Length: 365
Image (tube, rainbow, N blue to C red; front, top):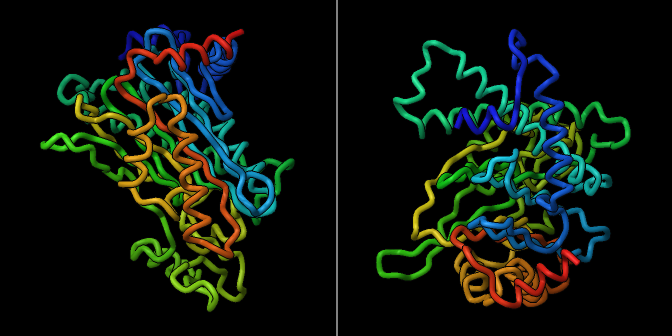
């Protein structure tokens, strides 16, 4: 792990790895190289690096509420590491929500790389740290610490950004880093990650990897109320709990964690991620990351069935989004369809179908 890091992030002797500029410059160079080599995807499509076992399918569909405030990213060979991949979905809300979502999408991967670098360097220089005793635990600690620093920095940077008014606007962020046979999941908001895995009898079943951070969750509601915020449903939205200011029926957020939304950050809304890990085995087939536009109308089981039955994996995210759009029309008549976005990350996709090969050839030409 440290040898790979050394190749990607050279540092000068005598410099404090947390305070120097070398790491930041190396990350910027890494980002430029990744874009140049088509390793970063920010629109609907798919990514599969040569020789990689990953295949990531991405699709986003605008709802009926105006501009599409969802966005996504997939970065193959994250940080120039051949065994790493970063992907995420972001669901903006409020007047400037689409700008906030794109700003966080732009800032988060590079900030995470920089903090991962600094944390790794700090751990490697700690004489009391035994990295060989429990590599899995140490790796998780490093990624969790890096994510916590990253989200705090991104939220602070967003607040200072004069070009984007994020006082009454914000975004969720659900991201995954795959490193070898481990995935690290960080979630802020009410998007959801669902793993598809084979049970003992061979049936493909869903395993939900994240919590939908809604305002009515006991611990979330307790924090908000302790901070003088309020949680309740409007009369015309029974069952939809929202976050409100102490003495004003605003902003009415449907989630309890988000970037931005500084109007209510002092009243219980936080941008702290829940960070977890999962060891990927041969039984695990793919993971789906999707905004609540999917999960409001589609069950975990339905999503697994739709994606697993898609012959061309490159079209898996599109098929899931289109299925969700049809479900909105059936289940939410009279309600404006939300933006719908999904990423389907396949773990063992060592070869492409002929149709996918043709698509790759077309895209490259």
